[in-house]
Image 1 (cartoon, rainbow, N blue to C red):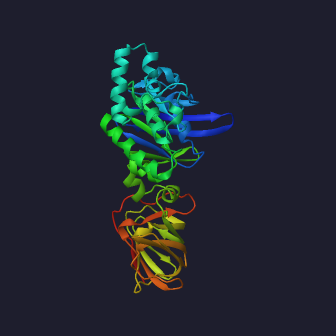
Image 2: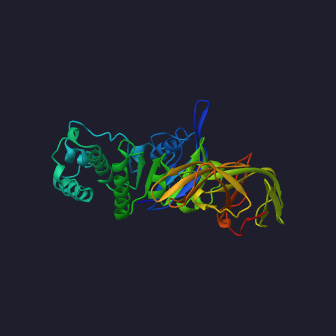
Image 3: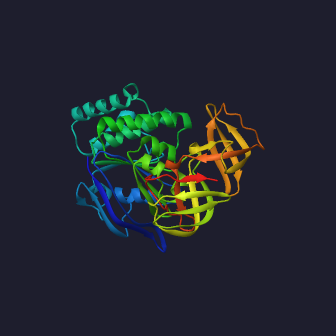
Length: 365
């Protein structure tokens, strides 16, 4: 397996800039997620790493070798597509063995290797079955088997579970992660599903409009988003934003959220004008004694929890509270926030004003 590094990689299609000078490193053995909405540049980035697209500029390194202008056949990688791309005239065993037969490997060696892969994937009993009659899950296992059978330096996967139903997709994501752990393989995986990325990834790159918005481990991206886009894209429901005008100095200051004062810690860089107060729904508490008020607009029962939508003087927000809490539409209630979980954003640029919970944000009347 191998480390993968891309440096200032850019891709243009005519006058359209699909990827804007991206730089990041995928460590040897990582399960690495490229996450973002449709059209953000994630698949184009993956295809450039795989050699299916050549970058307009920048460098791509696999195992220390610069491969940016080399075709896929010279990169020793394997690619798994969303739509399986199996050979319909071959059975399962022949589909898996095809890359080895193309390399001229002996029949005995091919049979042994295919048997090992089939055992790992749990498809030993269908090796002689035509692929046309297989379920979606089994077809994806065959596609994975064909990719991993020759021990490439890295695996590239473009939404490989996208064609499966929700229940089986969750099951296959668990299997994929377990397979990765057994093989210690370097894997780069494209998805638009933030739950899939958080569940499976060691590291995540979040992309938007061709740019890398944030790069890091799942918990840091969730807890301390670098931009409002990341805060909205990660999380269900996404982070709340309460907009206000204020002034924050490097020595600390106070701003007014309607009739409530916030004490801002010294660790925040200076900023003036339109700001956003970001808080996750699970970090909003309903407290009748709190000075900051909201009116309940709607409730959504989710079993162990409920999502409460509230109208405040600074905009609507959602709170995730216990389903046993008694909440009625039309009620007025106070709101408090866990000060360790607050992120402040520049409302115009969307950039976070802090990335660490060094000090609390204090709310008082």
